[in-house]
Length: 444
Image (cartoon, rainbow, N blue to C red; front, side):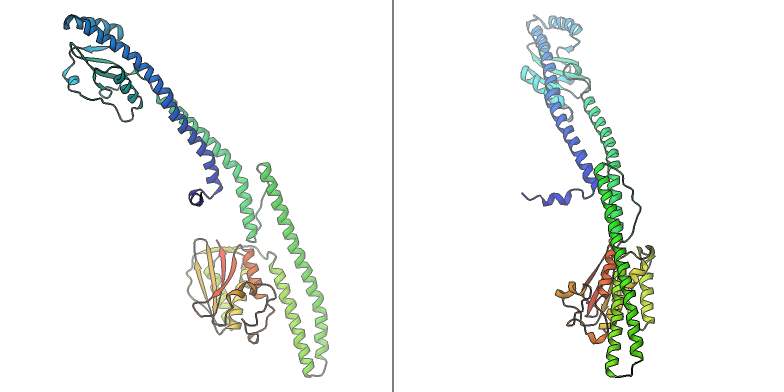
């Protein structure tokens, strides 16, 4: 059987699922107990009490039948009324005589048993009224002396206040469910705190987290703290190592530049100077890529459109052909502005390097922001877009290397920065300009 439809209607949150696990058994037990109790206990008790009343009504019928006259029957009935607590009338009043059917309230469940038991044992009954008076039962019985009306208290054929047990059961169940929910919320709070800390760390933010809760939750929290410390230590060690390598390489590169500057100008010297410059750019780019793996700067809450507009204006002042195509202000986002600016500038630089012009679009949704950079260049084939975001990858067929210099780290750095914010970088075809669309996705 396919139960996929069940997943669509089930709660997705931990609170909802835990509450469902808690409440569903309680409600099921209540329903089962209620049905069984009403059908078995009250039905049996009501039937037994009604059968006892049948014997008393049969006695009245026998007294009326054996009486010589109707006056004698009335006298004998009066004696029995005082002894049995009945109200009899022979013949029955006109209000009772005109009734030809049984009457009961719709929600009177025990009334069904009363009616069926009386009719099964007293075929001469014409009508039974359970509605005219809540505490009385009026029975009209055919006798040889005429129609006999018998009125007796309802409590003699059914248990009094049968709903009290059900009300008590529901009240206690609600109270215990509320207590269990409060306890459950207290147990789930450490799990939610751990989830928020892990989500914040995935977005490049460190929030204070203290291990608490049950033993299993404490173990998971301690494992998370150890993992976070190892990741931070690994990133720091990588950055320090690459910084040292960069520093060590810059010294011989500087000596090479000085030596080449003192040599006579020739084609060979110019070629070697270009190689030295290329090595310098490679070292700087590699160091920048290593730095972006670490968390740089503190997150700030800024207006997203104002941030995008500032980066575009700075790029325009630097001579890059880029325009911002509409962005309404007011929405804010929390991110590291220096790191995100670098990623944004890399995408704008790539768009200008391989195209004639670039356009920036910003869309704001319920789940996050999308900042797309469009260009009119040759674009990247769909099957090679994932490869383009790998470090030190230069796609010669997709990008014209004569249009600019690079070591293949621009997209990798941008993707790494966005992942540190909990977002992603997507490459696609630009419908606006026909080239590449590099889209930065930031969660709220």
